[in-house]
Length: 168
Image (cartoon, rainbow, N blue to C red; front, side, top):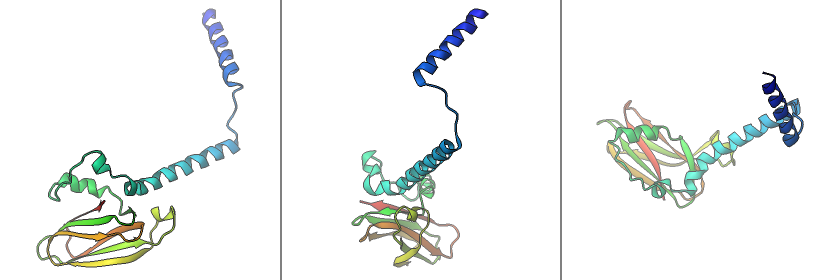
């Protein structure tokens, strides 16, 4: 039993020699660490919105576009953000399906440019308003100016599918 205690004590002294004295977490270090972690998480979260504008993941991973009838695709699209960053020259394609007899309108909007903060809040500026005459189809617009864009649906229908995606 005494042999184990000696081995443990010797091992601890070696670690102290390698890494130095064990330091306590002071309030200054604690606040600095918390601030650094908060800043890192905020920057990573912000990058999620900018990354698709510069990296075409569908081509890179050889994903094929799916039809709006595929519910799995619609459920995945529901996880996408309400707005995202687009570069000038890219397109925004909206595929829609409404019940028969429903009246609908798509409003494309651009957020007022405020770097990094536009990820968290958006002051929308209307870009285009498109009244839909058919109950299913698609509509495209070309982005002329880089920034955060989104689509708002104005309709009387309760059950509908609208999928919007970037075109390169």
